Image (tube, rainbow, N blue to C red; front, side):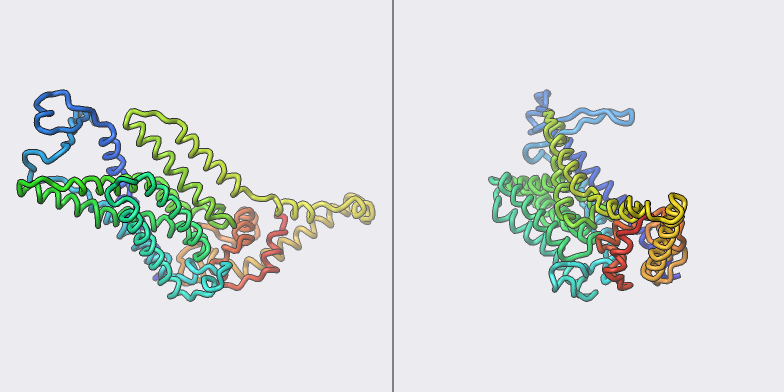
Length: 425
């Protein structure tokens, strides 16, 4: 019952997280489009009022006239709309999910026993939780300090963008060395999402409040607040597509179980930023197809890197096909050789299934024995040989990579992994 209630809480919290993220990212994308799509006002009255740009739009059967002021308007309404709760709700619900799923079972989901770094491989559960929190906080601190030191007055934003790109490469690499594969992808996305929410909380909203306060007092707002808010908002818009992909990645083990998973992650991050750049420029009236083309090219490189090597197929072929000499010496000719192959295949299937029963079925069953699951994880049940055959490719992949069993909680041996890798289903 406890596992069921935890799963239900997971479902509701994930639902809230997705709704808040859609609302926040949608609003962010809309305002970037609006800001880049503004045109100089045509009416002399609007120019006199200090209107910097305007956009006419039609939606849902109505017409909208958006205007942006270059400086403080003559007066502000009492019901001024603020955009921040969507950002805060997205981060809080996401962090809640992280605690419920990962921090509640750190030895299962966070610890990377196969890490080449001895200290990371030997982390206990509570230590992995502490390191994960430091990782999140450290990512924000480094990013924030880079913004303040490299381009404090927004005069070197190009150099800052390059620095942030390098930072994300470092974050991706470190995460895959310290944490288990799925958690590594999630935490890299969480570092970016934390920076996005912190940008809103520490810079964008406080700057806007200072501007509003000055305007209500009849003073001229400090232009640096507007510039800094725009800088952080621009960073947020380039983070959006990579963050969404990284949050979805836990469904696709081929990415996070690969030995070069950090590189696959980096390629997707840069591809998302390039594709986003195309739409940002398009809203400003510039069509630059080179950006999405470059993004697609990076994705294709990731596909090439992540593709199966074919070594398992070769191993399978060698176990399936007897040599010419073996065929010639087999008693009874082809028929006997065929029946011998079938017997060997059945024996291999029985051996593999016995390993899976001992090491995997405590979780991957219709009614798991492991207390952390109310149902088979990802709906994958391996209780019967037929079920195992249907999932053979995925089972071989995640076991060969060392990702499964999670945290090697059931102590699968290297010999057992080799047996499964050489199995021809």
